[in-house]
Length: 315
Ligand code: ADP
Ligand code: MG
Image 1 (cartoon, rainbow, N blue to C red):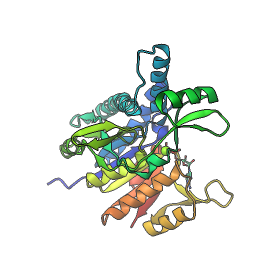
Image 2 (cartoon, rainbow, N blue to C red):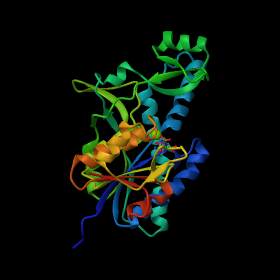
Image 3 (cartoon, helix red, strand yellow):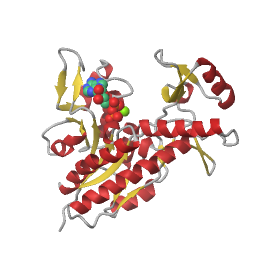
Image 4 (cartoon, helix red, strand yellow):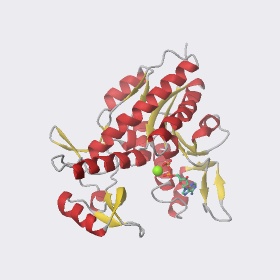
């Protein structure tokens, strides 16, 4: 009798994908190795990824198209996220397929699920758009964008104006049934890319929202929905630190959710980078007994699940 495999949802950060097309092509090879290492260790893996640079690039390209040809209407951000899921999924699923074959693993199909994420139109994040996206503009260009497209523009640290969008909390994974069916059948699924395509529900209609969802929170929701044993957030640091970047910085290996919450309150984790990861880790670890979260470096994923490194958060 086969023992039940450990189910792991992995969230891939920016360093797993690079910033340009050639960088991504090279990065996914290393990423695929890290993921297939976990499969060889006997884990059942589900992959989520970020899309910051990619969705920015697509958004800029679509904006240039509109500038060139006024008959081309502006591309909604939700469509840009959908494009980024397909583009990243294409590179990732091919790299995974090849790495599996290189190791003689022939029985695991790989697929990317275009995933929509319902968000609450009343989410307070919509009242306070804070996430900068796209290219920098002059004050004049920013005023045109505000008037023409209803964008909200903010000055970004003296570097010019950028569009800011809301980053609401994910409420429901629309394609969860399809994802669960594939995962339960033993397939390797890439889902909720870039945090998912943000949509709001109006009757039976799903409407794209001008927002971006944090992939750390999206992966937490997916891990809960799939009843995963472990949420692994792979990023650019091997461990989480308190007093990060200060002379008395201290790396953390093992944290209870209560300790983690205390460090959150004390402000040890930068908003927009480490804070959402620690918050997602706490939420997952508290959601059911036995669930744990791990934050570590992409290249250390295997050592991480073997308990050799990373920051483990448990209740
Ligand atoms: P990702 O693309 O993986 O989401 P981010 O850049 O958003 O990566 O977040 C990871 C980064 O958070 C790390 O590379 C590190 O520079 C930064 N960081 C902020 N606070 C901390 C902390 N307390 N401990 C460790 N890293 C931290
Ligand atoms: Mg991030």
